[in-house]
Amino acid sequence: MEPYIHSEIKNAIGFITFFHPAGNSFPSKQLEKLVSTINELDTHSEVQILVLQSEGNTFCAGASFDELLQITDVTSGEKFFAGFANVINAMRTCSKLIIGKAQGKAVGGGVGLLAACDYVIATPEAAIKLSELTIGIGPFVIEPAVSRKIGKTAMSELALTANEWKDAKWAFEKGLYSQLATKETLEEVALTLATQLASYNRDAIRALKNVFWEGTSHWETLLPERAKISGELVLSNFTKNALKAFKK
Image (cartoon, rainbow, N blue to C red; front, side, top):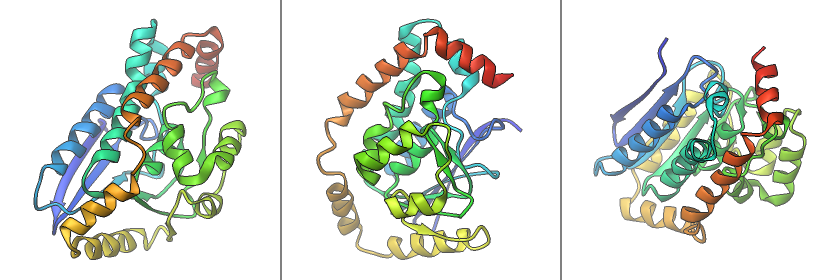
C-alpha cells in the first residue's frame, strides 16, 4: 500500500489517519502533509476536536530511515528534522484539542507526536522507545514536548535507555498516556471522549487549549534550533553505519 494521510469530519470531530508501509514511519512529504492537514482542519469552524490515529499494528516508527540515509549535507538534514518540529508546533498552536489514539508501539518521533497531543488513549500494546542514541543522534526536536508531559527525569531515563522498551503502563504512570484501553475498546473510548468534548462550549475549549500550552511560544525558534543539531549529527560516520546495519 502507498503511504497516505487522510482526514474526515464527522459530528464536529476531525479525524486524521496516517499510514506508511514501513511501520508508519515519516518521510518528509508525510510530515509536510500532516502539518497541512492539521492546519486545514483548524480552519474549519464546524470542527471542535481532532483525533490523531494510524492504521496497522504500530502507531509510529518515527523518522524514515530510508530518507535519513539519503541526507548528505547539513541543510538537508536540518530540513528533514524541521519536519517534526513543524508538526509539533502545528499541534501546539492548533486551536482544537487533539486526542491521540495509540494502538501499538511508538518510537522516536512517534513518541513526540503522542506527547504533542492534548490527551492520549493507548492500548497495553503501545510500548514506547527513544532509540535515537543507538544511531548516533538524540531526541532533540521532540524533547521539549516529551519533557513537558513526563518531566525531565523520566525523559532522561527514556532517552538514555535507548535500547529498552517502556511499556504502556510506564507511559501511563509518567503522564504520556492519559488513559489505557484494550484494543477492542480503543475506538469506542476515543469516540466517546471526542463526542463529549465536542459538545462543550467552543470558546471554553479554545481558551483551555491556550492554558495547556502556556510558556511554549519560544518553541517556534527552539525546535528548529534542535533540528539543526540533529541535522549535523546525522552526517556522522557513526550514524551512517548504524543506519546501514539496521537496514540489513
